[in-house]
Image (cartoon, rainbow, N blue to C red; front, side, top):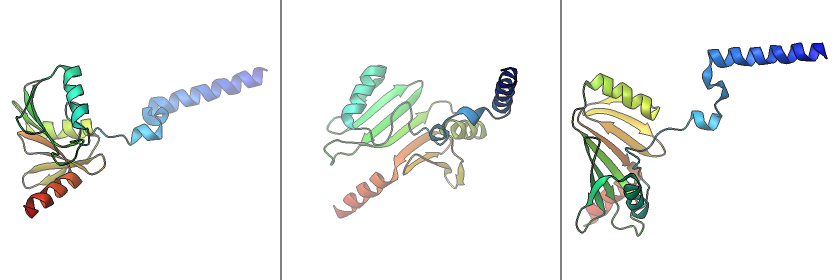
Length: 163
């Protein structure tokens, strides 16, 4: 009986030491790979109805552009534009753009964005880019964040080219 207690105590101490050294040890593997894929809760792929409900629940100050499926919101000092596909009957979001009032130092912003979205930045000519979620591209040019569903954007460009 005493041997079992000693062994159990050693196991508990070993697990506690492992958690102290590597806190992510207890996180499920499925959570370790989860990446944020929204801006202020708006994410490409949300339907227009889900977006409308979300705006009401959060009590965001938004207005819908006339004759389109676009919301323009003022959230925490940022001007947020949410564009939805007009052709698809569900009108899913394809782009979320947040123009920041006072973004601060670009290096600090890039680090903060990388931490929030759990992704590595890629330096480009116009700014920074991150790949977040499935087929979602986040970009930052020092003034605004753009979160785009690349497949939907390509489809919309193709449709516009046909016109």
